[in-house]
Image (cartoon, rainbow, N blue to C red; front, top):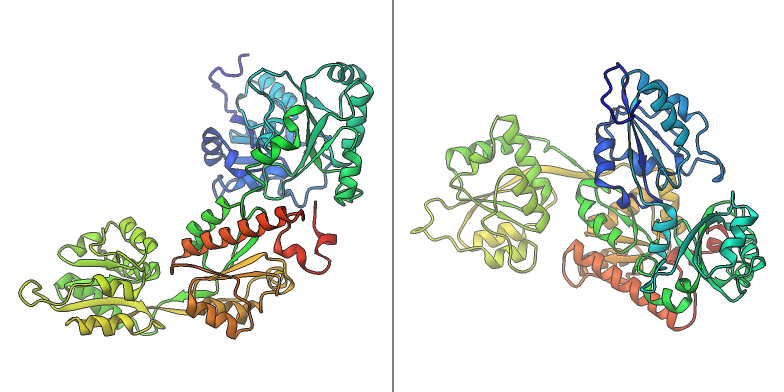
Amino acid sequence: MNPTAPNHSASGQVTFLGAGPGDPGLLTLRAVEALASADVLIADPQVLDVVRVHARAQVDTPLQASADEASIPADVPALRDTANLVMAAARAGKRVVRAVTGDPGLDGYVAEEMLACAAEGIVFEVVPGIAAAVGVPAYAGVPLRDAEGTDVRFIDARTADARCWSEVGASDATAVVSTSLDSVAAAAGELVSAGRKPDTPLTVTVAGTTTRQRTWTATLGSVAQVLKAAKVLPSPDGGQPVIAVVGERSAAAQRDRLSWFESKPLFGWRVLVPRTKEQAASLSDQLVSYGAVPHEVPTIAVEPPRTPQQMERAVKGLVTGRYEWIAFTSVNAVKAVREKFEEYGLDARAFAGIKVAAVGEQTAKALVAFGVKPDLVPSGEQSAAGLLEDWPPYDPVFDPIDRVFLPRADIATETLVAGLIELGWEVDDVTAYRTVRASPPPAETREAIKGGGFDAVLFTSSSTVRNLVGIAGKPHNVTVIACIGPATAKTAEEHGLRVDVMSPEPSVHKLAEALADFGAARRDAAIESGDPVTRPSERRPGARRRARS
């Protein structure tokens, strides 16, 4: 039976999906679509966390082991009973996604599962993925071909026979060898024995395409010494898979210029972001673009005001024409008003005839998502002072109403209120929400904060400093402290912290940019002095010994 023909039985369908070598961004659009509609997700442990985020909350995942928990050797099928699980789910009429590391045709062990589907007339499709042998060299800065069209040979050292080694050893082709860390030297020896010169350059990359990626440059004859000198071997993690590229394209002179991934300014840095996941989303995305691994820890929780009557009167006043302006100084203020609107069955049309001001890009975006385009956003500093710089004075001729609705937090400063009154406006300063200290993070996170497990922490306000220290303890002295402005820096210093980075502007994105500049300067200084590039957390006692390669 043709496996692509329509299935008229009660059986479901199966998608064999390549999840790539590790970077979640390498999933294809088709892969994301298939995951979003899956009833059952059966994934290799190494990529379960990569694919699960794109599946529905109610998707059935009969195999829950994640990459960190998996202890299955890399040279055998990751899950021996997956064929039975796949077939059972398909027979039950389910849409099954079978996700494998890399590409199903090159890296996966799913041919038998496909044949089983074909034998029973179960419809299936194959979604190709980025193969490890292709994706990892690209992330390591090692092109596999040049303008002269060098041949490329792919070798799995675990299954290669003498004839395979002999053919590759006798050629000048670029060889891409899939092996394990503690078997690289043996694979190099096979190539030398087969005729390759010992001074042929090679690169060895472990944890490719992830922020744990590390690449070493050596030659076929020196690779064992290089890995030993780097204290990579011997290691209890010697069985982890690596990609070795043998040939002129992996020469050090080339990689120094082409290593785009590992040379990111914050590559591999664990950065603590003490904000809620909702607030930290765009900031975390920016940190990821610099190579960092953001870890979001809420330091405040938002709760409704203790007495809601004032807020209720103000929202009703919006509808009855009590206000000329409403000013939002935070995303939480937008959320609080929106929730009241929804409670009363109102929508953005209730803002008709009212001028709307917003402080900050994220606040403006929250309003646009609500269906409201702000009339005024500060042209300069995104703060209460910046808003006052652009706010028009009250003019009884042009302004029929002299009142401003200001929904804010219970701990907001009086700067904006005082400034608006000075400009001639009446202000209804309303507590729209309360900020309270969040619950302490998990013990593992607290230990990492105090023990130097984080490379940097971003403080976006004085309250984030006070609250983080209060719920989790003081960051270790090796941790880079980055503050959004002088007031926040002063609070950090009062808590005994050394401030290393300060944003040139009171913007979370400028703060992240300043941290990236700091990381780049630190990296350049290490390279210039001939020292290895390390993360701040690797400076703490015992860090090198415990750090995973």
